[in-house]
Amino acid sequence: MSEPATTLLNGWGRTAPTRAVLTPVHDDDQVRSIVRDAGERGVVARGLARSYGDAAQNAGGHVLDMTAADRVLAFDPETGLVEVEAGISLDELMNRFVPQGFFVPVTPGTRLVTVGGAIGADIHGKNHHVAGSFAQHVRWLDLLTADGEVRRVSPEQEPDVFWATAGGMGLTGVILRAQVQLKRIETSRCLVDTDRTPDLDSLMTLLSETDHLYEYSVAWIDTLAKGRRMGRSVVTRGRFATLDELPQKRRTDPLAYRGSIKLSVPDVFPPGLLNLATVAAFNEVWYRKAPTRKRDQLQSIPTFFHPLDAVGSWNRIYGPRGFVQYQFTVPFGQEEAMREALGRLSSFGTASFLAVLKRFGPGNPGMLSYPSPGWTLALDIPVQKGLARLLDDLDGLVVAAEGRIYLAKDSRVRPEAFERMYDRLADFRAVRERLDPDGVFTSDLARRLSL
Image 1: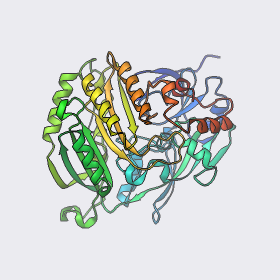
Image 2: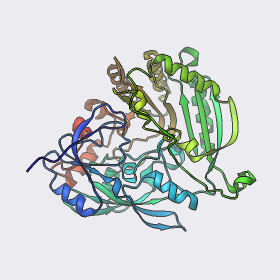
Image 3: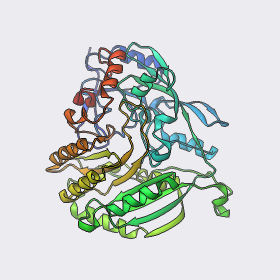
C-alpha cells in the first residue's frame, strides 16, 4: 500500500513549512477514526491557518482540516447564544448575524479565524480591557479527546479541561462544537475617535487616562522613529453607534454589512521589498495623514476592525523568506521595559509597518491564555540578518519584566525562555498528560517547546 500524500503546510508568517497528511473532516466519526490511527507522529487540528508560526503544523504526522465542519447548529435571537461547529469562521458569523443585530464578542485584527482556532488560541481584540478574551464568551465546548470520547466541558463542568483547552493550541484534543455568546448591536457602524501622539510617553498617558471611556482601543506605532519621536503613534478608539447616532440616510438599513476581499496579492514579491527605506516612507505617510484629533467618525466594521482583510494573502508582501510576528506583554508598572524594547527595535531598524500597542485588562484562568494585565506590543518583522539574536535578547527583557509572548504569533521562542513566562505551564502539562498520556495530539510547536 502506498503512503498517503502529504501537503506542505506553513503558518501565516511562511517561515518554517513542513509536510503532513492533511485531511478535511466533516463529522465526529471521521475525526475519531483519524485520531485512533494517527500513528507515532500524532495529529493536530487546523483552521484557517492564521497562527503565524508552527502551531497548526505537524511534520510527518496528520493534520485535520476543520474548515468543512462549519454549520450553525442553533441560534437564540432573544439571548444571542449561538451553537456552531468549530470550523465556522468569524467572517461567516458576522455575515449571518450582523444583519440580525449581533456581533462576535471578540475579534482579532482578522475575521478569517475559525471558532475552534479562536478558542485554541484564546484570541483577544481591541476590547480586552472591557470584555476579556474569546474563551470568556464560550458557554461550553465539545472536545474529542485521545480516547475517542467527546466531552462537553465548560467553566463549570470540568473547568480544568476547559481552561487547558482555551489557549492550549489544540493540544488537549479536537474542538468539535461550541456555544458562544454574541454581542447585541443596534447598527453596523462604529463611532471612532482618532488621536495622533508624538512619542511613547504621551501615548501611554493617553491610553492610561482614557481607555476606560472606550469599548475598543488600539494604537499604531512607528517603530522606526528615534529620539524624541520614538513611539509616535496614531490611536483609534471607538464603540458601536446607536441607531439615533446614524445619519438619517443610513437608518433605513442600519445593520447593513459586507466583509469582502477587494484584491489579492500575487506570490511574486522579491526578498527585501519591505526594507528600511520603503517602510520608513510608509510610516511617515501613515503618521502624517492621520488627523491630530478627530471625533465621532463613522466607520464600517471592516474599516475599523479588519482593514488588512481587504487584501487577500497580504503576507506575500514580505517575500519568500517570510516574516516573524513578535508579540509580547509586560505588566503595568513595567513601562520602562516596554520603552527599552521599543528602543532596541528602533535602533535595530525593524522594517515593520504593522506595529500595534494595546492595554490588557484582567486575565482569565486559562493555563496558556496569553492576555494578562499590562501593555502588549505586536509587530511584523521581515526575516533578516541579526533578527534571531534581537528577539532572543527581547525575550530576556520580557522574562525579566515578568511578561510573556503569545503562542499564536510565535515561531521561534526558546523553550527555556518560554518556561519562565507562564506560571501555570505545569498545570497545563498535568491536564494534557491525564487526557492524552501517549501524546496523540501534537504539533511542530508542541515539540519545539516540549509542551
